[in-house]
Image (cartoon, rainbow, N blue to C red; front, side, top):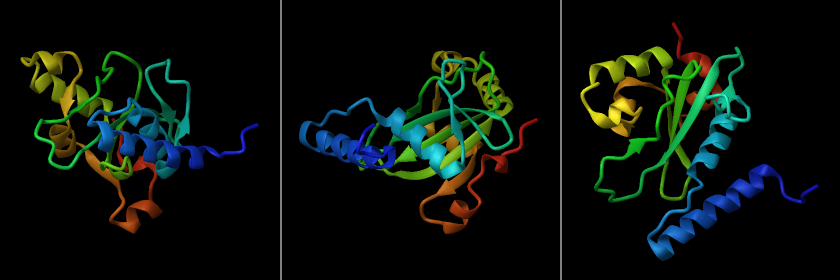
Length: 165
């Protein structure tokens, strides 16, 4: 048994990833695990193995895919959400946006049906065809379900806030 809790390890992982980027200009591929941890903690989700096309279950048994993206200060490119597995079985996707210190800032959610609808609207794009979506599009289409700036989100942080059809 480890002397560290998962929460303590995540604090250290955030610090390491942040310090590494400041020193080298490169990122460590750790944002996905941090996003999974934050989504589970902040939205009361139960993590699963992720091999089934979704990463967690909410309190109502909805299957949730979790994506994370770090938004760095002064970033010039249009950041994208990782590939959305639209052909697999899941009900909702959560996007955890983090600052340069790998701390969660906002969490957005979209239902599977909303993602498919956005993909259909922009099917001409090769990236969209592969299940990619910009962070800006996700934010514009999805619903914000948590923010570190608003305590009321934290008190009601259950994924049930986004209805699934």
